[in-house]
Amino acid sequence: MVSVPRLVIAAPASNSGKTTVATGLMAAFAARGLAVSPHKVGPDYIDPGYHSLATGRPGRNLDAYMCGPELIAPLFAHGSAGCDLAVVEGVMGLYDGASGQGELASTAQVAKLLKAPVVLVVDASSQSRSVAALVHGFASWDPEVRIGGVILNKVASDRHEALLRDALDESGLPVLGVIRRAPQVATPSRHLGLVPVAERQGDAVDAVRAMGERVRAGCDLDALLALARTAPALPDEPWEPAYAPADGPRPVVAVAGGAAFTFAYAEHAELLTAAGAEVVVFDPLRDEKLPAETAGLVIGGGFPEVYAPELSANEPLRRAVTELALSGAPVAAECAGLLYLARELDGKPMCGVLDAEARMSERLTLGYRQAVAVSDSPLAAAGTRLRGHEFHRTVLEPGAGPVPAWGMHQPERRVEGYVQRGVHASYLHTHWAASPEVARRFVEHCRAR
Image (cartoon, rainbow, N blue to C red):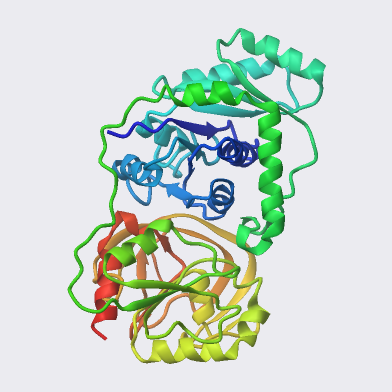
């Protein structure tokens, strides 16, 4: 049984203040000495970085599309083990999910799967009494979603606050916080959302501290904690990456990190380790060599387009990556990793493993995908079906090699990515917790070298 107190922080729509409130709550409760487990609904990699900074624990994603609804509670239990409180930041509006698939992957679905009370963050900047109708509508839409209170954001004045409170008195839902209209906390955005923590360092620390101070000043933390403690126990066993690997040496799997490659799910490294690998993180911006005795390479997502000159200038590492790939070693590259393996990115030489060129585009490619492996690779056997997510403003030409990585079935049918020698490179982000055999297969290929 899982009995961690928990809250889901949701909103009627995007840009209502979920990230500020959720991160601020995490920081405020952590400052009280609580062990806070941070979670994010959906595939987003960036917000969990701020959550991790606020709590000192890995930010973890709860994505019912990529992992399946049946894994949400077990993944939550795994991440929140030993904690005093869990805070789950929602995605988009409370009831928004995967396009055309009802509640799937919505904040509402995750809240129901976790049996967690929801705190609704409302942007009150352009309304007064109408806030009651808005909150009533969200609270009554799905009786299985328990909205336990409201935090009013962007409130203009004492008079404005009084009007809002009077209106909400009739709704029966308590006001658990009021955050005044103020200059935005310094969390700059870029073409794919907030700038990741790894790129901002001290500034990110200051931003998280400011969020915590605003939330602590405006919210009733005792009432919020009491609400979190009303969540019932979950009868779910925690997800575990445990696996009995073959006896023998642990192959070194080098994982790209640093400011250019910040997109990673915590479970991936856990699965690689459980499968028998020694995971070593390196920074392609700074390190001129791969870790000693590297047998396999994982290059996840991030912003290589922002750091193309620096990545290109690190010629010794580019040569090392190319040599490893040409040797037939297992290489798994997602999105940013795909671009790094290309011949060039925005005119800057990259590793040249793939005969393709990449460039920035005005068009955002965003959405969930259904995919099937076109051919055997160190990641998947031909015919393996996975769900994933695309999120990029770059274009790769050609988009698929002679042997593509994936056949896509949503939203349109197409092939995508590259499989050559031991390389599997694609724009598709996947969550290996849903398919642990991916990590096991990858490590087995590393061990076989």
